[in-house]
Length: 456
Image 1: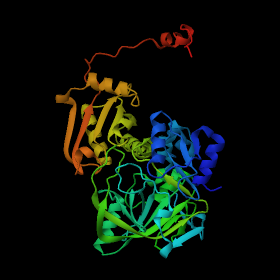
Image 2: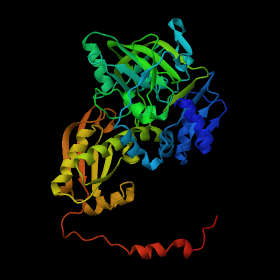
Image 3: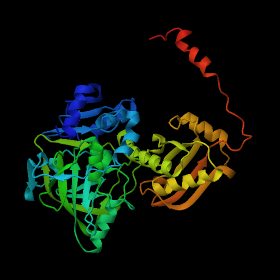
Image 4: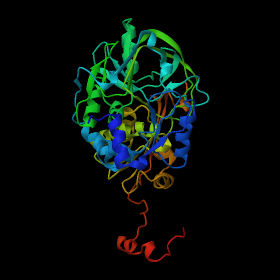
């Protein structure tokens, strides 16, 4: 069986049935589906939701597929705690896609007057969104100068029966491709992929150079080439086993208001002028699955966190051998904070490490460096190191006017801002030692051997 969304969900039902929840009651695409996901997340649960009664949609709507590190590890065939290492290792050997003559994604083809985005169960995530949004689509574009394809997550607001207005974030590859086409007065072909295997999601988010085709990254993570078919109305290629594809073109220099939209930051920035996709075709499988990514929820944060975290770990370790572990916590929205633990080092190494991390990822705002005995995933331990090992007049690094995220509300209208580095390591030979206990004593003094069992 091909590694697509359907086979992944079938495996999940068979091997991890607690990871998926079926909702058969009628649910409105206007906020109701998203509200259920977010309320469940607030209660500490992160299952996949499969909605079978969203409006008159003949298929299902799924959300929250990527909200669990263990589930993403399951998709790649590894434990959740091995996900980052597996991500880095597999991307060391890219696997190019292959072309096939046909695929299920084109079992049903809508063109011309039949193109109508209202046929799709596109969700409205928040009360202040001016229209429904395609929030889980992977956009494919091709650079007119190099011919290299680029895959990226782009939010798309429905602005008409056959138009979508996208958010083309500055400094990103999709924005470069669009501007290259505009300089030549050309339309930029685009395709939006909806419904895909989780490896496709992680591959599309890979931090790779502009001349790398992200389909190669998707193949590396899948462990086999992605099978592609030619689009019906534009010069692009899309996965043969996707659920839905929206084809169209981005007209040069055309800009209309897009937003507000609740982003991963938890805030909705004001509407801005953005490019429009003129839709020329919608293709899909029979009984299609419409996939949504819940903006600002755990799924959204985790999808961005894993590629960035894994890439930083590979990059920093290759340059600074004293690096032990890295972590991008949810408290930093999985993008803005990086915590790094280090072994023995020279004082100047910490500043160099911080600057390298900022250059490697322009979203990053704050880097905290701690000693190797600090668990970077333990927020209390990291904050304790910050409280006891940091002096602001000596251990703070400030870099002004650096590129940042255009979605950061504190930097609006941006996208430039300050970067801060916090050296929270213990300095000097005379720094007081941390207290410790004999490991053998700790091991034999187990609470269950001395305390009564908890009352139920």
